[in-house]
Length: 104
Image 1: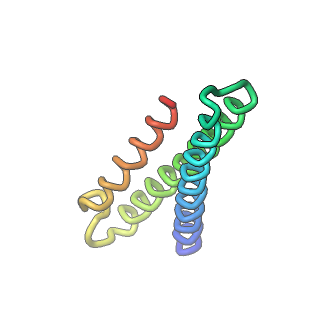
Image 2 (image 1 turned 90 degrees about the vertical axis):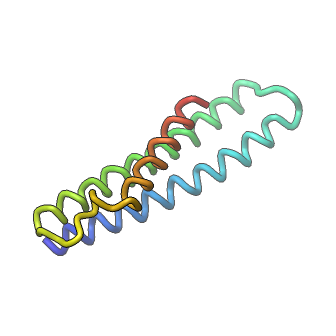
Image 3 (image 1 turned 120 degrees about the vertical axis):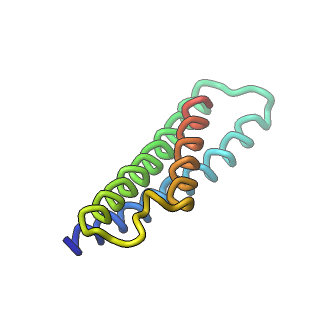
C-alpha cells in the first residue's frame, strides 16, 4: 500500500506541474496571439492544445488527490484529509482552473 501512496503522490506532483506550466504557457501564448489584434486559426489551435494540457494536468492532480484521500481513509489516518480546509481549498482551486480553462 505504501507504493500506491507513492504513485498517487508522484501523480499529484506531476499533474500540478503540468497544469501550472500549461497555465503560464497559455497566458503567454494568448498575449502573443493578441499582439496583432486578432486570433487566427493556427493561434486558436495552439491555444486549444495548451488548454488540453492544462485540463489533463489538473484532472491528474484531482484524481491523485482523491486517491490519496481514499487511501488515508482505508488506513484510518488521523486527521482525515477530507476534514481539512487545505484539502478543500485545493479541490476548489482545481475546479476553478478546470472551469476557466474550459470557458476560454
